[in-house]
Length: 427
Image 1: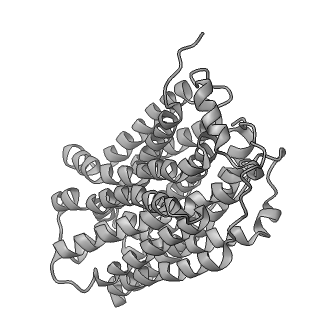
Image 2: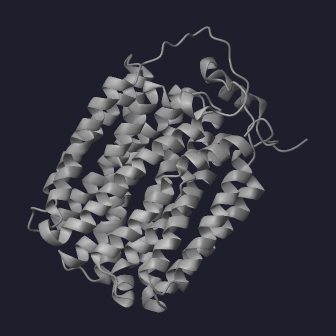
Image 3: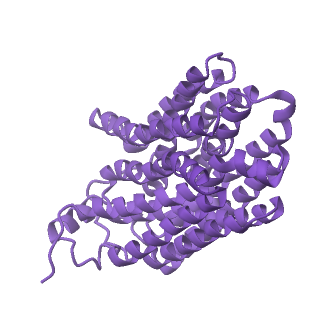
C-alpha cells in the first residue's frame, strides 16, 4: 500500500506555483535585460514595442493552450508547453537582430500562455469551492515571484557573463522543473498518495452544477455567456498594468529616473514582492466577506473593486519628484493589481464546468493580453512624445471601469446545498 501525503492538494498547487515562477522568470528576462540588449543590438523604443507586442500576440493564443490542456490532460499538456518555453528562452541567446528577437518572443508567448489555464485547471480539480480563491492566490504568487527573481538573476548573468547567458540560465531552470513535474504530478483520481479523507474533502466541497459534462468544450457556447464577458472585459482593462511592470518599468527607471543596472537589480523586483502579497490579500478579503454572509461571487466582486480603488495610486507615479516614492507607488500598483487579478481569474472556476475551466481561462487571457498588446504599442509609439505619465494615469482608472463591468455582467448563480456531488474528473 502506497504512503499517503497529508494535504496533498497544497503540495500539488505548490508544484504548479513553481512552474509559474519559471514561466514568469523566463518571460521577464527580456524586460530586465532590455537596457543592455537594446544598446547591444541597436534597438529603439518603437522596435522594442513591436517585440513585446508580438509576445502578447503569442500569449493571446491562450484559448488554444486551454483547449489542449482540457483535451489531452494537465500533466502532459503542461509539460509539453513548459518544455517549449524553456527551449525557446534559451534560443533568445542566439538572436542578433530585433526581427529575430521578435520571432522568438512570439513563439515564447504561445508556449507561455499555458500558465494561467493550467493553474486554473489544477485549482478547479484539486480544491473545494471555498479554498479555490486561496489556491488561486498561491499559484499566482508564482507570477510575481518569477518577476522578483528576474532582476537579480539577470543582472548577475550580465555582469558575470553577458545578456545572452541570462536567457540560457532561465531556460535551463525551466527544463529542470519539467522533470520534477512529470515525476510528481498526477490527477486526484489517480494519485496514489491522496488519502480517502482528503479525496472526500475535495469532492464534498465542489459544486455539482459545475461537474464535467463530458466531451470537449464548445467555444461558441462559452462566447454566448455573459459571465464569460464579465471576466474577459475586466481582464482586458486590468492586465496592461502587469505588462507595464514587466516590460516597461525597467526602461522607465533607466531613462527617466536614471537608474543603472545595479539599482534596477536592487529596486525593480519590489513591485512584484508587493504583488505576491496582493495574491494572498484578495482571497483573504473574499473569505472575510463570506464569513459575514456575502455570497462567493459578490465577495469576489467586492475584492476586485477594492483592488481597483487602490490602483488609483498609480496615477501619481510620473508626477512625484522622488524616485523612491515612485517605486513605492509602483509597489502599491503591483499589490492592487494582483488583489483584483487573482480574484477575477479565479472566477472562471466558480462559474464554468470543470471541463471548460482551462478553455475559459485561456479565452479570458486572450482579452487580457490584447489589452497588454494595445497598451504596449501605445507606449512604444507615444512615449517619446508624451512621456510615461499619461500611461500611469490610464492604469489608475481602467480598473474602475473593469469593476463596473464585473458587477454588471457576471450573474451570481443560485447555490443548492442539497445538490448531488460531482465525481472527481480526470486531468
